[in-house]
Structures are given as C-alpha cells and as structure tokens.
Length: 141
Image (tube, rainbow, N blue to C red; front, side, top):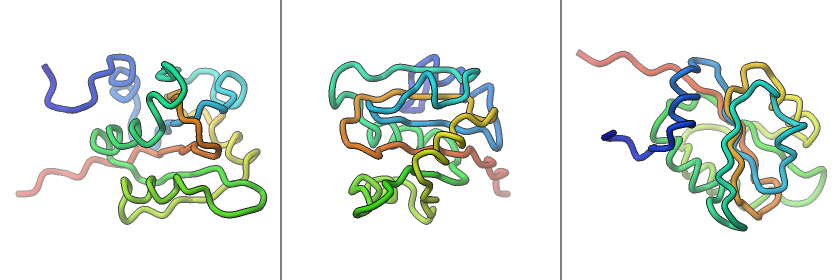
C-alpha cells in the first residue's frame, strides 16, 4: 500500500516516467483532449460524469504528490478572470499563474514535454491548468 493520497496506477506510472520539466495538463470537460495536447502524452480519463472528478480535486491530490515549478492557465479573450483561478492559487501557494490565451495554451499543451493529460468532469469553462514538474529538494541534514 502507498502512503500517498494518489493511488491511480496510470497517473503514478506517467509521473514516475517523467521528471524535471515534464508537464501535466489537467483539463476541464470542454477541452479537446485528442487534438490540442501532445499526441504522445499518456491520457487518463477521470471524467466519470458531469462535475466528477473536477479540476480542483485532481490538482489538490497532484500538488501533494509532485513538486510544481510553474503553472500555466488559459484565459478568455475578454471579461473577468475565471473564479477557479482563486482555487488554483490556494492549492499552489506562492506560485504565480502564468496567463495564456486559448490558442497559445493549446500550443503549450502540444509540447513534447507534456507527458500526461488528465480529463476531468469539470464543468466550469477555462478550468484548465498546465503544471510543470519541478525538482525534489535534497533531504536536509
């Protein structure tokens, strides 16, 4: 049995095979998973039904399992910032969200370093976040 909250075998496999600089896309239920992400990336479909599992629930577990170096988010062309960004910030304290327009975000998700695409049942729009894996700090002492 594992100590970590993260138990999904395909996600653990993808994370174990990636390293510093690897990217993980957590996507809302509207995201075009098959055409707007690295075709070689492992795809995990957690979109069981509308609203289950959502992007925040997935980020909450991943943020405890990996060091996150940076995070890119997709922003609308106009209007207010999506409310979900406040939840992303709460789970990634001290990390600035890099705001990117929709088509530039799609380009980032197609990067060969994107090793994992997680489809969620998130219903809020612009609830996509692309995490870059950081470096695990050496043990102190």
